[in-house]
Length: 191
Length: 249
Image 1: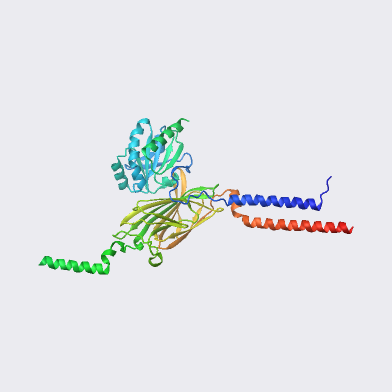
Image 2: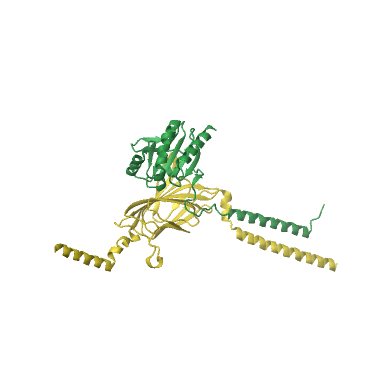
């Protein structure tokens, strides 16, 4: 049996402390790691992660006072657009969505607009000016937007026909990108 | 004759206004004091336990109560004061997003907030801004400055995501949105320049994150180095003593 000498014990303890030092150094470095910072403004555009848990739904009134739920569109892919009549990019995008819906409704795709932090009068004028034919719902206090984890306007959730979220897009779309994303939604819905 | 007199009166009045600067000053006489924040609605969208981050969105309603357009002045801040609209953000915020119906202008980002160079015509305007911020352990504090005051303040947080504390705010109600519960806290009448020291406590935090954020790794590393040096010194001292003993023997 090998006898433990003072020297061996000392070497063992030194190695142990070296190891401890490196373990703490690594943990310390990891815990102090810099966040994924984008210091610029409005840098998170395009596809972004969905923070709302699967199964998040809405039940909101339209301008006629009728309650419309996400479940009402069951079996159909849905594009949910969070917007405001006072938001510049939403104004810019309005015609794209209005025209896009006129094409896509015949292929079974539904659009729902949720007006957040907005006034009924402005919403009504916005619908008329842009000839919007899809359902527009009112979320005056932005509570549904909060529930969906909306961080920008306009923000679109692409929902599969089974009610699950496919992806989320921040910022306004042009017709080409709208078509591209809806085609992707339909593809993902098949899987 | 009458026309001549009225023309003379007009020129005299015009000369008077020009000399006193009243006409040239008419558009710029709106002071930042005329800009009022009517509603300040802050919502904690999500609490990410793994990342230890909060996702926050704020909707603000502002009004220029003056009949004229407010024109910001960045030229001589020391002399004229901060004559522009600005909003407070927690230190370390990232991924800032701002949208407003104010006339176009630039956004100036600062370590603890942002300012807008937009002119503000008479009337009411909306502004939303969202960002992410890290929290440590299970607490988050944010000295929320109201440079333009606020008639009302509301903060919504998902239930069981923490407790909100701060000056003039109290728990108002529990809101249910599509079977998800939120806690709503209200405050009101914050005067211009007032601070609301917002404290968020009992934020859910994973055990590892809680421990790692509560430990001071710099201090631990320093202690480990000191102990190591002591051990090395001790090792050589013992070796020296052992050699000496062997020699003597």
